[in-house]
Amino acid sequence: MSLSTRGAEAAPLQVTGPAFPAAIRVVDSHTEGEPTRVVVDGWPQPAGRTMAERRERLRREFDHLRASVVLEPRGHAAIVGALLTPPVEPGSAAGVVFFNNVGYLGMCGHGLIGVVTTLHYLGRLGPGVVRIDTPVGTVGAELGADGAVTIENVPAYCHALDVAVEVPGLGRVVGDVAWGGNWFFITHLPGLSVELPNLDALYRATRAILAALREQGITGKDGAEIDHVELSAPPRRADADCRNFVLCPGGEYDRSPCGTGTSAKMATLHARGELALGAPWRQESITGSLFHGWLTAGPAGLVPHIRGRAFVTGEATLRFDPADPFQGGLVP
Ligand code: PYC
Image 1 (cartoon, rainbow, N blue to C red):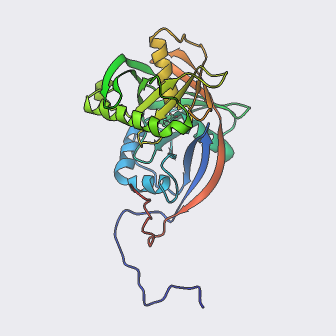
Image 2 (image 1 turned 90 degrees about the vertical axis):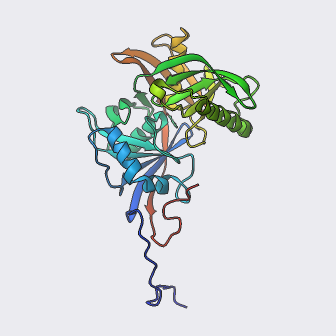
Image 3 (image 1 turned 90 degrees about the horizontal axis):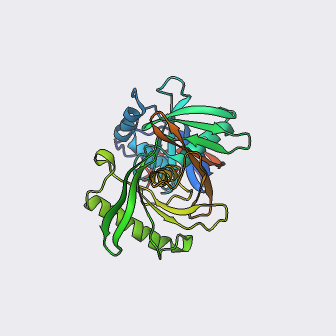
């Protein structure tokens, strides 16, 4: 029997649709448990003078690549992707747009730590400080001699303290609205333990809060959509100040303590007079991993610093067979 099945009799059906490259090369890592997939080759560069323009071009022209790189069968719903671009600001080494199972992020703290660790792994970056442009501003990252990465995030701020939202099944929930590179509603629900065996209940509660925020028109500044919900809880680790559960926009939870979420949390603590400039904040995730954070004062406001570690878990060449019914990913 011949293994060749390509007979002249069966010309493949030609379906026109979005164009896929033959291959895209990626490097996978996790940052304190949360996965990042950095695209290192094969994805056409989006045009645009700013990173926000490039993110928009990605949304309009290359969304099929986002889905095919992140989703099953090549990935899974929790992966955050990172597309590297040339920089847009003088003094920056690169630009990056982060994306996930449903769309695009402003900034991504765990993702930036993953990007720096990946660039080091590829031999493109040594220990020291780099500036990287994102759609919400330029951020800094320092790779330490021990392999840990410290990011200097975009300025964070607390938009509103003690905002009440009526949530079906939960009643009146009070929380803070804060920016840390993405928009967060940060609250705590006594009686709901932040433990992995309790994931179903945590998903139900945070998804209900997110839906109620949308229905009741509770937003960030200038009507910006709040797309992350963060629950704070007492720490389990002796070396942590707080444990969290963070629901991300695609409906998945952050396995890391969430860099932008920790930034937003520190801004709310500062607004309450509970975290001084320079004071350490040790944020534990639901998986038990830890970010070290602190705030400094910058010309544009509070600058969050987050330190954590990422580990490379694999390298892959993704293929896009035109005959594959799931060439563009298993889109839910
Ligand atoms: O670390 O900022 C973060 C983040 C956002 C979504 C997933 N991780």
